[in-house]
Image (cartoon, rainbow, N blue to C red):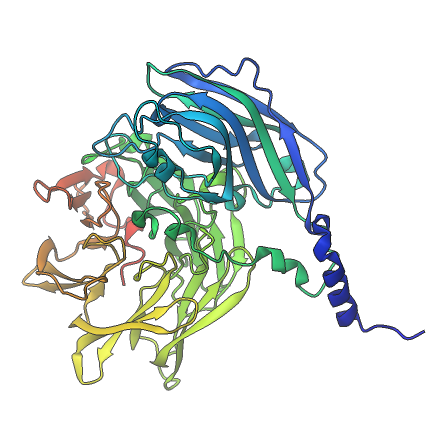
Length: 553
């Protein structure tokens, strides 16, 4: 009997299984115990719906949530899904269309069956289309979205990844009691949940050994950030609490550990007291790089460190804070690991590093290496020739509005070496999107959306006479704006949107050896004067690292 080569047999098996999707993983539907279904008016915790999940034998791949719900004034509601033992949690929707100038949110109603899944549409857009207090948001399938922040932020309503948060739960973690909490956060409107179903797709047994199982994990054809309103093309940098505001976060060495201190930005120039900050340990202060990225796709910053000697990322996922950190070996000593972003459009940031040959080795290829979060596939974008120090990358942000991260590199202009030349490359194909001269080749780079069209601009900073000066080139128009003076020698520049108006604010961390004198200083774009100051207190000292500075190069 002639044997079929294994590679051919596997391909035949794959072709035969096109019509049998169960080979890729089974789908299970678990009914929720809704009881009377009544959602208490303006009450916490609200209606808690348990789902008894059992029989899962392989890790989860993704989840969907189906609700038959009626309620007047959708802007009152939020819904949060939690896996057994609180291991993974995610906001499904919350306070739809609340914003800095809207504390009540959208007035339209829920009335029908709504499904929430990663391939769904824009719930906030549907609510906007349902005009009037008697209008009903069209039943259908919608993406989970970030929460609205009444009176504080305009950054809500961006699509998030249920797969990123709940995918990969092993059977011991996924079997058990899941809960959905539906809360009414304002008085005067009533509603009920008549039916709730949790739909879980698990992973297929690894029947193939040559990589064909990865076909189902191919990147999204359309970037999640581009599926919603334009402000969602880039994520709010250093938002550790999920309210669309950059937070005040410090990292400091405590013995052999890095202690992180997250002070929530409560809006309008205020923050929680330092004594109320969330603290935890992650990283080694003598070796590790510090960064913030969104590995799980909930648009909440995940604390991250990278150890150069081992090339290991350690990521503390916001959606699974009780889990051990995720450790991923990627990169080598000498790399710049602060280039992560959503390069494939699935809503989850991909790890990325910039690499240049060491000084003394002679000119060689300079590259950005990208590792897809969903599949682990690695790609490389070539940025030019040189050695370490010839060019500086500030990648991981969307500069052309397609919802995908791009690569940006600063180097000396060949015809005028004192000037800085920037090259912007497509993060997937490596194709050149733009090339221009801006500032000096020695200027610092501060990524952010300073001009207001949702795309990240190119902003450079120089020091003269003890003061800091900034120049921004609008990514949309190519026009360079007027110089902005902010900060002094010794300040650490920060990225982020601290006033929630969808624009990056000029901000610095001003460390001091005088107890109680260290502080964050923000020049809010919505009202540049007066500046905001968040004092670091007794914990803030000159040796602290402001995490929002991790992408300044």
